[in-house]
Length: 392
Image (tube, rainbow, N blue to C red; front, top):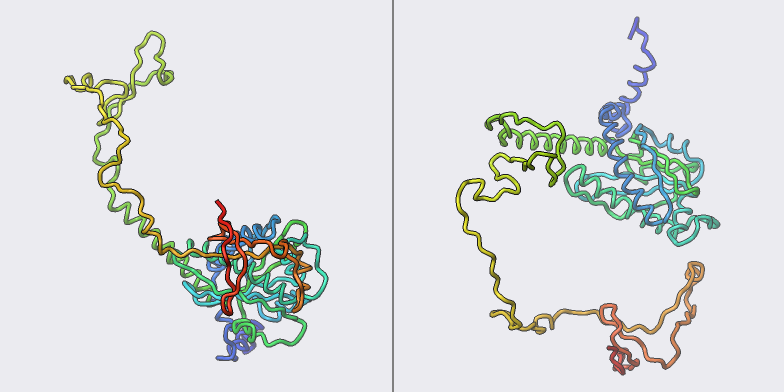
């Protein structure tokens, strides 16, 4: 303050602090709690985690997936609304073990359609129709596998077990008035925004956002810092216990070296071949008697001849030991194949034709292995199977 006049920064600070408990995660103090060093740590954590997630996504869509270096910043709900004009998909990932908090991944509606079409065996161009429950279920499963692998990488970084709950996906129209707290409480204030570009072949090239509460981001930074400090302490402790390798050992006398080292097994012209000498060990290629000047009694090794008799104490296999092991028996009436379009047209009353003729014996499988044929019978009110043929 200068001469009774407040600067714009001071006015903004007073306005931010006047909210009290209502300001929540959006207060200016939350922003100040996350230092530049902590922002760098969050960026590195996200870089490693999303790199692992990209590898998992590649296996799901069978397309090359590239993710750029994450950019860490702060945002509010209005910033997210301004960045996305069309409806987008919010995927919430909650941590259940190792960390206490959640984060949200924001994907564009068109990107979700492309990813789900690739997951279903398409070429990523079938984008007609509205985004429905099928798309949301597919993208939730994809994120479950992606963020699961990311949690595994995070476990290695934090040196503790990290687990997540199954992600939930919702289609959000940011142009409509929405209570952001109904999606997640931390969206009502200032939160950490990690943005990066994701490319999937030549189909997707767009910005993806990952949203963190400030407190959750700070918890991850503290865990990483603590883990690094423990590693340094353990390393320094090991060095303090172990003696220096050459502190107490006498210095060996220098040995004249030839100008050109001979190849192993081939002496130099006019000179005998000398084996390298190891301290405390006999020379390679020299007999023990020559090394110590003593006679050594050397005899050839003798082994007992093998016999066909069974060794004592070893009995035949006892199959009784595994008689109580349960096996799954499956009776297969028939099979067929359908396209995704035909499966989506299923409804009550739909008839599916199988690849087996009426009256033909049905297959009996044990743990997935084809073992017998049989015919269907009715036992009181239940179906049964009468074995008619055993398959060798």
